[in-house]
Each structure stands twice: as structure tokens, then as C-alpha cells.
Amino acid sequence: MQPLPPPELTVRAVVTGMALGALLTPCNIYSGLKIGWSFNMSIAAGLLAFGFWRIGAQAAGAAPWGLHENNISQTAASSAASIISGGLVAPIPALAMLTGQMLPWPMLVFWVFSVSILGVFVAAGLRNQLLLRERLRFPAGVATAETMQQIHAHGAEATRRLRVLFAALSAAAVLKLADGLLGTIPRLALPGMLPLGGALRSAGPSGVSFGNLGFALDPSLLMFGFGIIVGLRTGLSLLFGAVVAWGALAPLVLARGWVQPGPADPAVSWFATLVEWLLWPGATLMVVSALTAFAVSFVRYLRHRRRGGGPDAPPTLPRRAFAAGLAATLVLASVAQVTLFDIGPAEAVGAVLLSFVLAVVAARVSGETGITPIGAIGKITQLTFGVAAPANVTANLMTANVSGGAAGQCADLMHDLRTGQIIGATPSFQIVAQVFGVLTGSLVGSLAYLLIIPDPRSMLITPEWPAPAVATWKAVAEVLAVGLAAIPEGAVAAMAVAAALGIGLVLAERAAPARAARYLPSAPALGLAFVIPAWNSISLFLGGLLSALVWRYAPDWAERRLTAVAAGLVAGESLAGVAAAMVKMLG
Image (tube, rainbow, N blue to C red; front, side, top):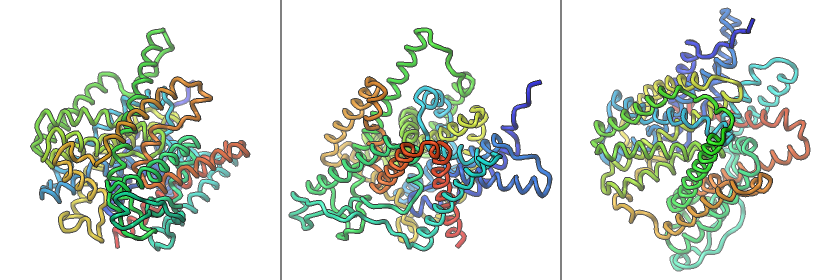
């Protein structure tokens, strides 16, 4: 007699995930408006649900809480917490500051749900391509799977791995709490200056410090943990990209006068001003390389099928259900743009179709690096509609909001699907859980935003609420009111080089033998290094370097312990970040 499959898509799993999502979503809204950063809540949700139902089993005789139920729960909870990609900490408040338009709660819920649900169906279509054919890592999904497998496992080896995980978790959490609540662990900027000439020298300063450029050692261990998972090749690519972007191009654009320097303090980062120029070649490199890789891989797959290759994996959703869902989300997001913001039907449909493409890009970049470049994705849409509808600030912001919402939820679900792939979960069940999570996040996140920031014009971009993402989206929308002329001086040539480099690296990687291809840099990682602080790239590289050294000199230990260490570092900082955000919000 065949054993029954473990419980998976149960009512209590979905309800638990929705409840945890309702608890964790306001934390990301708070941190997003405070520091422009959010946290992946998958591991936090898995640990909280496990603890709750373990107590429930001991105190009230509840049925055992299984690994597959926990996976459904964390999928719903993490998608709810990821709702900030739907615009609540960037384009929506930016629109309120520029035009005064604020949506009431029911309409805001409708908008956030409409743009976020797009990404769920894009991810459903991408699962087989990115996970089975291209075999991307999706490091947050790996860390989640490792953590949950350890807490649900039994036996001496599982206990040892769990101890390693919690030791790493504790170390990362203590550092994060000290840094966030006490402010006692500053970044250690690398010493040294780079000389400058040209326009900047005549204006005053003759050099820029490594601290100004962001070359520093960061106390955060989350990126270090991600670096362990993504490995040395991606880490080296990020480091090389940071050297090119922040060590070579940034001083060049400063010397040419294309970007104005920041405060004359060698310890202060000039990231906010420099990234407004660097994001153009960086985003171009990510987009072109991701689309080229996707196209090449898909063509190879079609050739394989025509030659009578083996049977393809079953689709994530039945084909009719997938087609109907994709069509329904297109209509829903288009109607939302037209009815809420008076965007033309053609522009609305165009924004949704562009969002499908950019969600693919976001998923591939996130799959390689663990970071979803929502800001860069949004800027591409802002530029597109800055040309198509110049001087229309509302269209500029809200069409980009569609891209950001789709990209964020698509990447979040791809990481969850990676978790499910590792533990043997049912993908279609995770899709259902993601939809319930998006609904929960839309309801709770919209309410939290309206309660925390009732007056965006007076409250945001202030010492109390710096809202860096709002400031960036607002500034880009104002600049792009003039169309293509808004592209910074010198950036067009850099974008052309980046596009050629993206195509060339992908084609070279596909053409080279496997042993040689691993020595080529990763184009998405190179591009990502242009739009994140250099200290993040350094942390990711150091994690990848440690991973390579441990695998080289202690392979047995690496196989049994290294992923547990990485998962603990990611979980510790995520949990501490949530706790710190809740303390500040309640205070």
C-alpha cells in the first residue's frame, strides 16, 4: 500500500501564512520608508510557524506541523511581506508628493494587488526555464530550504547542523541589533584617495576617497551569507563590476563634471548622487544580458524538442489555467491604470507587456545574485514612458510601478519555488499560496502605509522619514518630464558599451566549454554591481571566497555544514531586522 503524501496545501497552512504575513508586512513598510531596504521574510516565517505549531502540538495536541505545510505557510507570508514592491515605499508616495493624489484604502488595495499579481503568473511560466533548464541558484530559496529542512529533521547529524545554523543566526542577529539599535558598528572605509582632474579639479576638490565611493567593509552578515551560497564566480563578478563602476567610471564622471560631488567628508558615501548616472549602464547590462541568455536558452530548448529530446517537465500550472490567469492579470492591471490614474489604454497595455519582459530580467538577476534590482527595473520603465508620454508625471511613475510590482513578486515566488524544488513540494500549491499572500499584503500593507504616513508631502524625505526610494523615484520622474534628454551626459555611450558587453559575455559563455565558461564573469552580476553600494559587492565576494576556500580545503565539512552557516547568517539578520523595525514602529 502506497504511503499517503505529506499534508501540504491545508487550510491551517494558508491561514498561518496569511497571519504571519499580516504581522511581518508592516515591518517592511516601516524599514522601506526609513532606509529604503526590506527583508526577505521566508526564513522568519518558517521559523515562527514551526515554533507556534510545535507549542500547539505540545500544549493542545495539534497535529504535527510538517515541512511541506511550513513551505506553503512561508510562501504566503513572504509574498505578503514582499508587497512593498507594489509601490508602497516608492512610486505611490512619490506621486502623492508631486501631485497630491492619494488613493483611499480600497482603491490602494486594488492597485497594489493588480500590479503585484502580474508577477505571480510570470513566475509560473518561468519556473521550468529558470530552475530546470538554466538551473539558477536563487540563493534565498536555498537558504530557506536548508533552514526548514534542519528544523524539521531528526537524528544526530540534523542536530549538529541545526546547532551550526543557530550559532550563525545568533552571531548575525547580535551584529544587526547592535548596528540598528545601538549604532555602534560603523562601516570601515578603505583608506586612500583617487586623484581627479578636469572640471571637478577646477571647481575645488582634487580627489575622491574610497569611502566616498563606497569601498568599505560592512558589518552586515546577510550579504556575506548570500555570497557563500552564490559562490566565487558570482562574487568575483560583483567585485569586478564594483571596481569598474565605482573605482573607474565614478571618478571619471566626477572629473568630467557629469555628476556633482557629495559632502567633503572622506567617510561619507556619495552613492545617492553617483548611482543616478551609473544605473543607466548597469541596468542596460542587466537587461540585455538577461534577455540574451533567456533567448539563447529557449532556442536551445526548442531545438532539443524538435530533435526528439526527452519529455519536458510538466507545466507549473495547467496550460489553460496559466493562459487565463496571465490574460486576466493583463486586463486587471491595465484597467487599474486607466481608471485610477487616467493613463491611456495603449500606454497601460504597453506598461503591462513591458513588465512581463522586465520581470524575466529581475528573476534572472535575482536567481544569480539573490538581489532583485527593482529600482533599476523601474527606471527603465520611467525612461520608456518619459519618451512616450513626456511631462506626464503620473504616467511616468505608475507605469513604472507596474514593472516594479511584477518584478518583485516574480522574483519572490521564484525563490520560494526553488525552496519547493529542493524539498519536493508541489509548485501549483505554492502558486495558490502566493496569491493568498499577495491579497494579504495588499490589504495590510496599504493600511499600514496610510496609517504610518497620512501626509506624505510633509512627512517624507525628512530626518524622521528619509524615504530614499521615494526621493529617487520622485527625482527621476521630475527629470524625465523632458524625455530622452534626461539621460545624463555621457551615459548613452556607456549604455551602448554595456549592451555590447552583455550580449558578448552571454554568447561567449554559451559557446565556451563548461570548464572555460566558469571563468567568464557573470553579466547580470556585473550590471548589478553598478546599482548597489560597493560594500555590498565586497561582502558578497568575501562570502564567495570563503565558500571556495572551504570547499577546497575541507570539502566534507563544506558539504555538511556550509549551507547551514550561510542560511543562519541570512536568517539572523533578517529576523533581527524585523525585530528592530517592530521595536521602532511600536516606539
